[in-house]
Image 1 (cartoon, one colour):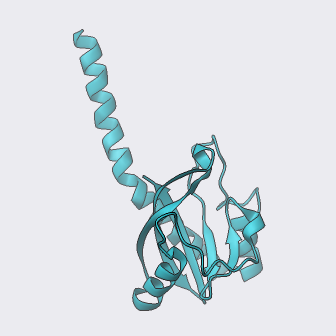
Image 2 (spheres, rainbow, N blue to C red):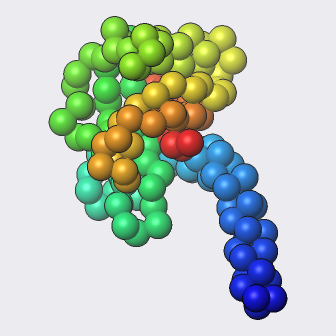
Amino acid sequence: MRKTWVVMTMAALIALPLAAQTRDQAKALVKQATEFAKKNTKDKFLEEVSGTKGQFHFNKGQNNDLYIFVYDLEGKVLGHGVRRELVGINRWTSKDPDGKPWIQDWTRLVKEKGSGWIEYKELNPAQNNKIMKKASFVELFNGMVIGAGIYE
């Protein structure tokens, strides 16, 4: 019994810091993507985001549930680390299941502050596209909204 309690306590202590780091990991990925965008052409950057072998693309089952998405300031998808079929589509009027215009919200946020967090609901590719609460860190660079989010 004592051994079970010790194992459960250790697992909880390990899991708590990991959960707390998730937002930090998303923000760090956006910073990494922005640095890559600064050092490369826009086409190369967007291929790293949307290309299945790119470093900013979602790889389910490989401890990489984070991915980058890139929009322009009018809501057009420029690159997406999961749903490449969205590239070229304008999603300005998209709303989450609660009616929140999240693309408009994050665009306003980056125009006002340069970067920050936005919360909304979205499909989670790691959970068979189940709709879940999501918090995304977004940053403005060269007319692009670069972001990554975590599902809560």
